Length: 292
Image (cartoon, rainbow, N blue to C red; front, side, top):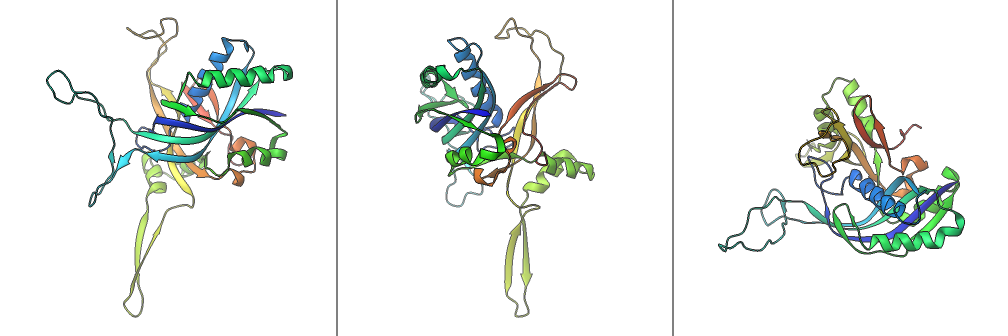
């Protein structure tokens, strides 16, 4: 049996909208798994030392990306925050940060909570969420957390119904892998699936019709799926945690697809899990392959 903690209708203000190093939109899944891990550590420090969060999923019900496109503008501009003036009356320098406001439902697979402790567990989750940020944003409100137990794929509908209406991310790494096996560079393979091709046709009477299409169907987007270490583990000057080895890393990017939860037939196509590959210096978040 799979046991889930469901936190419905989380309203998050000013979340980090970097979905990858190159694009903005829905916050990266690395941010959500980081928030789930932080919640587990807070609960472990309390009365639930044996608690483990093994996987999570996020259903997006609404997103308000903080961008602006004026009349006649070709591109959107990021709506920045209004920082206070400095002592000379000038606007201080700042780094533009993409932000968004979200309404999501968070699903977390858990182990290590006895059946008799469920009320205390839910109360502790509710209390800790009021002190946390998620994906860099402030949690404004959420509905009462609940627990759900299902029998894997057989009862998946019980879970996906609680995520509707909304969209979840499905990993489409196989698209990149196939394109690269065919000889394409990684960036070229990604852009090939994201590019919209506009074509025109002229009929016998001289009327022109336009069509737009992409390489494959679906709402395909680039997503960050972890980090690749580019140095050896060690200690750096002025690092915040003096007891944990430090490593410089770069982001890993692949393709994902936004789908409505009811379309998923396998539980493992919904959940994201973390994995550490020490041999290849990879810190990954992933789903099981679609053909699993």
